[in-house]
Image (cartoon, rainbow, N blue to C red; front, side, top):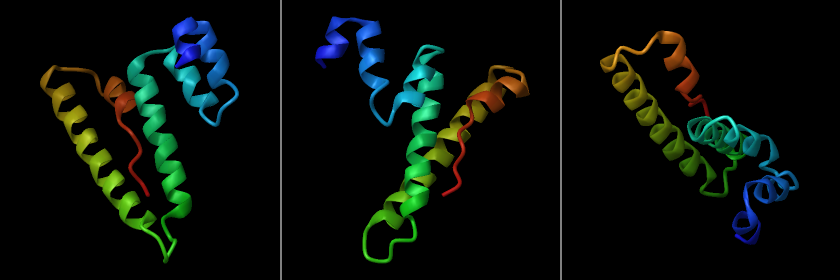
Length: 98
């Protein structure tokens, strides 16, 4: 919070020292790109723990993937309704494989 209060550059400097460094770079592109990269990062983490037989990680991974599929459906339907080109739609759709 302190880094964000100091300004954008301070915030990016702080994030560059965290596991979210690659994801934070996408925030410079656009908020939508950041959201997509964040979701893909979370899916990657869940993919590594989805086979844990003694925890709730498989349930969390399933629910997150199901939610991501719903988000993708909304993106596709909204984009088709607004006449967006397919290339632009593909840029916005997230991976949902867990």
